[in-house]
Length: 618
Image (cartoon, rainbow, N blue to C red; front, side, top):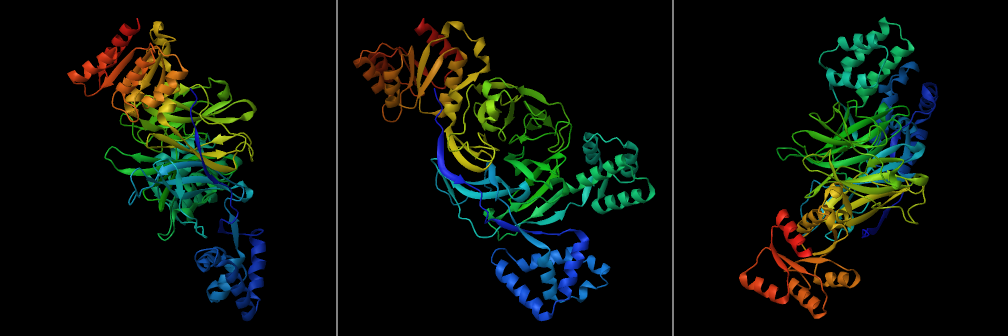
C-alpha cells in the first residue's frame, strides 16, 4: 500500500533582502591605518555630511546602527597608537564614521535556505484545540557559502497546515559572551581526539593550568609557552588546537524585543568561520520533567569539522559548547528527546555511511562504544545512510526519519522503528522511500536531493520540513499509521509460515489500537490492510479479496453491525470478527445473529487473538 504524502503549499526560498551587519577589515592593518587617517583628515562638516547620509541609508535596515558603528570603532581603536593618535580625543561623529568604514552588510540567505528542523515552541499559550506553536530552524547560506542558523515562528493547525508569523524588516545578531571557565578534563578529551603529535608541548601547557581555568588564564599560559619554547610546525598545531577548542565555547543572547523571525545565529568563533551546518533541534525532557531545547550542529573552519551542542530554554539565550568523544565525529548527530535507561542517547554516523546509536552519562561527551543499527540494504540507500533528525517517540517505538543516497546521488527520506527500551534494536523499516524529490523539487544547487534535520509528531501525523536540492525548503505531513502499516517488521521471518499470503482487513478508528493490532498481525505473518470506518472498509472490500475482517463496532459513518449487514446482503463470504470494549450479552447475540464469526474483547490479548483467528481461518 502506497504511503500518502501530503505536501503543503508553504515554501521558503532564499531572500537576499535579509541582511545583517558584520565587522569588516579591508586588506589588513596597513589598509586600516590609511582608512582611519583619511577620515581623521576630513573636515568636521564633511564628516557630518557623510555620516548623516550613511545613517539615512542604513538606519532603517538595522536596529541601533549607531551602536554597531561604535562597537566596530572600538575594534580598530588599537590602531590609533601606531598613528600617534589618542582614540579618546576623537569626536563622537568621527568615531561613528570610522566604525561605518569597518562595517559591511551580509545577506545571510542569498544563496540557499534549506535543511530545516521543526520543534515545539516553549510558549503554547492562547491556542485553539489541536493547534501547536512551533519554531522552524533553517540553514541559511550567503556570500562565500558561509552558513548560519535562522528561525521562523508558526502555528501548526489541527489539519497540519502551517501559518507562519509575518516577517519584520530587521534581522538581529546576538551579543556574544565568551564563556569564562573551562574543565581541563574536557579539554584533554577533545585534544586526544585530534591525534596531535607534539605531546610534550601539550603536557607543558596543560600542566600549568588548574582543573578549571578561565579563558584569560589559558591565553596567558600559551603566551608564556611561546616566549620560552621553540615553535615548530607540530607545536604550532597544538597551540592552534587549544585555541580552536577554547573558541568553540560561548554564550549568546538576543534582545527581548526581537521576534523569533529576527534572530540569527551567525558563526562566532574561528571553529565556525566557514559556517554552521544542519542544526537538529530537539525538545529534551529530563527525568525530573525539566525541559531544555538542544541542537547538534557541525562547525566548520575550512579544514576541521567539529560537532557542537546548542542549549537554550527560551530561544533568547543560547549556550554553545563542543561535543567530545571518539564517536563525536562527522555530521548527523541526533539526540534522543529523553534519557533511555538512565543515559543520554544519540544517533550518529561517525563513519559517514551507517547509522549508529550511542549512550553517555554526559550530554556532550560521547566516548563509549557506538552500536551499529543500520547498514545500506535497499537500492535507494546503497551509497550511504543517515538520520534526518532526532528520534520521535511513539507508542510503537522510536520513529527515526532517515535519509538514503542512491543512484546518481539521489537523496530520499526513509524511516526505521527502534525498540523503546533498547533503541539499538531495529523493529521495522520501510522498504521503499518515504519522500523523494518530485519534478519541481529536484532542480537546484544540488539536484535530486530532499533532506530534513528534524520532524514532529502532531495529532497522529508526522510533520516533515525538508530541503529541496540544497536551495529552498518545503513541508509535508503523513499519517503515522500509514508509515507503521507500510513497514516490514524485522521478526517477520520468524512467524508461522501457514499465515503467509492470508490477508486481513482491520476496521478500527482508534490509532493506538490500530497500530498495536497491525504490528501483532503482521508479525504473525498476515498481510494487513486498514480502514478507519465501515464506509472505507466497503471500498476496500470491493477492490480486494480478504480472508477475514477484524472490525470494531462503534465507528463513525458506518458502524460494525451495519458493515456486517451489508456483507451478508451482498452474499460476500468473508468471516467477520468483532472487537469491542463494551460487549453485553444482547450485543453479542445481535452480532452472532447477523453472522459474526467471533467476538474479541478489548484490550486485545495477543495469544487469544492469535488462537481465535487461526481457528476461524483453519
